[in-house]
Image (cartoon, rainbow, N blue to C red):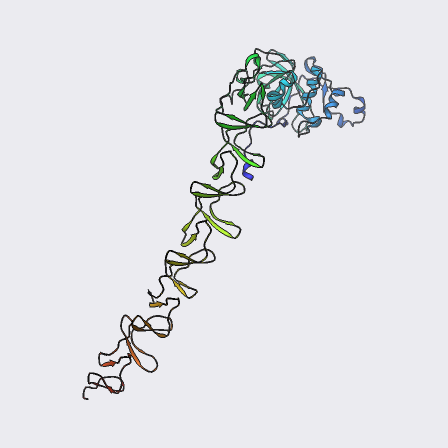
Length: 516
């Protein structure tokens, strides 16, 4: 089911990226933290700045290369296992040092959207010392704020061409900090490690009130009925909330995870990251579901990339035969609607362009096919009403040809037996039991007819090897009459050397001799 994994929400990556270009190190005093044993074991090249550094700018002291930092080296961030070079790993270690609490390892998105309040933190849109700056693809630590100048520390970051492991301490403006700095992703907001309340802007439902350039980009997306304001006592009201990145559904102050949500007659699904899924296939309990643009679960016919799917009333994707009204449709194993010829086992079916199963006669190109009432393609002899047809092994109707000694007309019919037929070569006769006369006499009705070796009716004078006979234009043999100056008797044979019943004499060649 390849097509089902093409749709991914933008802005949910948890991987920290390297900066696209070199960073400026001016006015930054970085000194390696003390670890004599480690230093002694390294070569001069290996002593180059890498890892966690201390005594940075503006008197900021960062010295977590020891026990605290090494403790975090034993941890991993989700399935990514960041190790010592990750931004999330560094930020958690630094947060632990600043707060004195053992802080879990999370990326910026998870800190801001889900876990900030689990550890007594708050969040908002104003910069503040002892805060995590959260992005869709990065997390940094705000060390101090001096007017519009903000000093941060961040791991997993370094000059162009350098691998992860560099830790940078630098000062920048708020606007610079809250921009995508070549791989951080969109800025989301701040998580305040000291639980600060900055004018109520820790309200997660309204990030657009802050100074972030990206904070209001999704505030009006979707069509959800939840309360966008905090409830009493600062708790988040039940319902849908958009944090500037995507929609979440809250109950009892918590964002729901990994479950269906019913709202206004529609169903939605929030994933493990608490975000509403949209524009994607979802597999649950061995069944597939599709979430539309507004996140609502699809039902009925669904068209994606010129391919049709059918979702039952419960949203699950249909496969196999489905009857809708009086029509049958077949959905392949990947859910795509079948069209054209379909082979199931040893049986062939034909599905029209709209997917409905064909029955009865179907013309494809110059060929005709017959599909039985159950949709299966007919082969061999079939009787429809009073008419018989023959369908070849490939299903194509036989026409203008002989099959099993029976002739099939251009319309495919083997007409009523015992019938005269005309083609470009002349008239021929079909026996009641099938077959036809050839190179012989045949009495049909009350008249005698003669057929050549190919089975076509003859006319005029014919010689049967011993006697001459005369056949009219309709093929019937004449008897007891003159044909010009020749006479044929009661068996149709021409008289020779004898008197006719009406008193005339014919010679040895059958010609009348007037003088006798």
